Length: 544
Image (tube, rainbow, N blue to C red):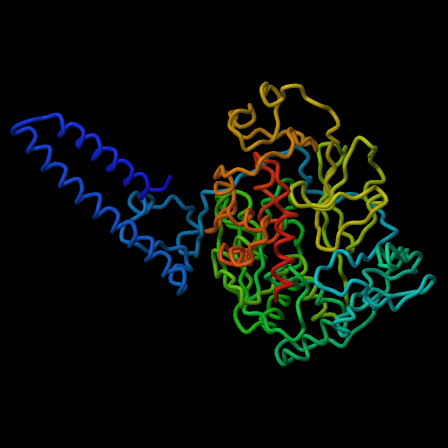
């Protein structure tokens, strides 16, 4: 309950009590109580006026961008403003945004800070990884063809200049098709020694935006960007308002991005300079402010970007949450996002003229004997990555994190935008009255389980839902988990009933699946919130 509601309810209760006493009292006591009633009524009135004015000032400050440095604007000071800040020294003069909402899920199986010895031979490009392209792209290779890293594999029929390139050099060994001849996967057997297609290196200082977009599109690197609203591939003829990058990930067992980008300072700086050429606005960098000391210099030392620090629990590391607090998206806006490792890939292209789409992937999960990192191009074979592990039908493999990742088979491949592979136990065991006897350690937003009482002790995850789909009732629990100024439960109900106008008014344009994944995890009603949100986004996109 916020401060205004608490004050209003308290004064209203006191007013009601005094009214009842006055009705039963005679003489001078009655007059005193009546005078008290007038005083309290005046206090209630002024409390409402102050609270409304305070809220209106905060809303207006956000609208005009006056609160962009995390400052509070209103008539009444916040408690932390009265007692002083407890921020670490390195944040004293920085733009800091603090969130009290969210929840960190402590899981066993975090990646050790070491590179695993893996040998990956097969890679795949999957058109289903890309939202916003024509249903069946135009494939320009055939089985048996030899390709270099950076050679075109297929292109989008709606944007023929938008190329999807090969992650490695090798031989096309399989083109898997699905229903209606849809392309499921194009599988490449990699060469032992990689060969790269060479491109003309654009001059970062002098290249025009049009030339830069053409160069990135022809090399396949425009696929690294996603356009919001809708989280789709960008349109080449649209200039984004701004570009946003999150340099840290708060999802369960997420990779350490400082470790992943170690030694790539020059490429990362070149990538940021390139991004600034692509937008009419600014490039925003979201930095991790949760530590007691400063983040890695690869991020803090970069120039030509606007930096914001974020303190809080998951999903504060999501770029969508950061966009909301820095510069929210309106239905008319178009902004781009890009993964932090992909910035260095673009930087390397600008410096060397080659398409090296290698990423550092975190291999995680309590079911694995060895966790750590592997640097491989996108679309790596899961079976090759986990060749030293005993993964059986009793395990589930996830490309991505446990909240928003995608289930894949051992014969599958890592998703294009994923930098993590997670292995968890398959939840096949039924627990009789498991909700009534919370005896074991398990990840939960509920405070009734031992792990929460012991300060968030890490536990092993499995896929048990521990409950079935139930009535979609308003509980307010999403508000505690989503650090954004929207009404998530009302939004989901609007999507379910297909109320387009209400969806837009409730802020659907600001959300993508990963932003509501934590709400789905903590949902008492067991609603598939991510798929509900995507259905709503598809409706809004179709409406134009």
